[in-house]
Length: 141
Image (cartoon, rainbow, N blue to C red; front, side):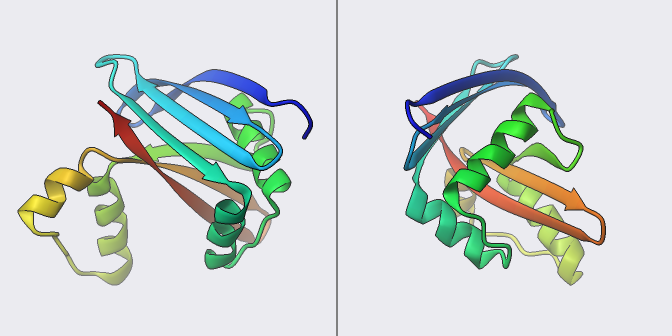
């Protein structure tokens, strides 16, 4: 990747319509999400080392450039193999509890801080394999 690239698309997530903006640079990624109904905004900046470490922890290592290409394909809906989801902390907890069969709730003070975050999930599915990579976006005040 040479010069930074800017991408924007409207996405329909389970909590309504959002605009997703990406700034892709050689060694950095910036993600911004804005809710159409409320104009709430979330933002995250990630360097190449963080993304590569994150993908390594998922068990499906991706080089930064490959991850950005996958994210771009998901945003532009140019591939059936990748897609995006935007989840709240409550959504994540529901998914976790389904996996382990138990319900866990954070303390009330932690829950209020966590509810301000959004989690952008890059989902990729290929024959006989499926993976998720999650980046955390913080609310812009």
